[in-house]
Image (cartoon, rainbow, N blue to C red; front, side, top):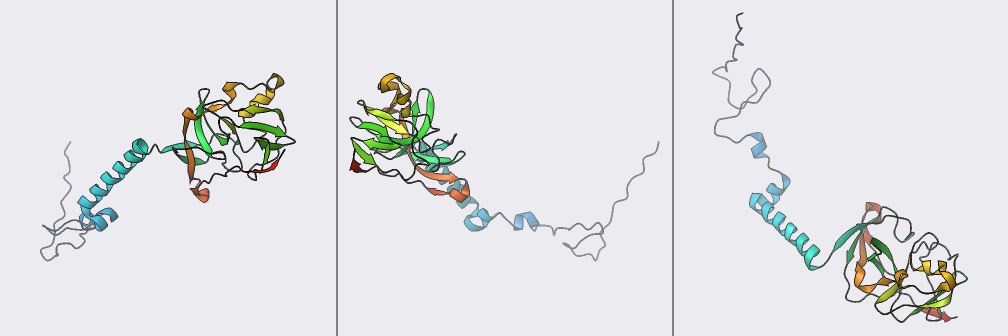
Length: 228
């Protein structure tokens, strides 16, 4: 079988370089850069190739410093226990604090889990829940962020042990938290129902997703407003 050779298209002598040939393809002028080389990406146009590499290195260095130096961490809220402050699926940023205060939103390790809750009471504080309201050291505390009043009671004052903290979810009636003490016989305090300050990973400071809720996350300082 004979093979038929496909004839090559010849360039007319008078066809200038860079014009389209009969196939519609551009003929590059010898010695000139191609169109892709003449149109570099935006980073190269703004910073140049070397500048883009420097910026990339700086960003990597900043990310490493934030992670290892500042202790910045990123988490996904897994449940409805912190509604309406944090919604299921929110992506949040935490940063370690020198001192944690009542009302801070914190992420911490607890019984082989990682939780996000509101820090309610510190070592030596006493906590009660009566008629759907929170009492801290015998005084009523206003909590405008709660989705509804608590349906359980803690009539006996629970004292936070040394090194621990009492934590609750803002969506009180669906949250698994230190209120589990209410399920114990005679409301006896159990250390395992308290968090440990040494297990706190960081304070919630920012939400980066979803974008419509993008922005800082503020704590709400707990202040006693009336006595029991």
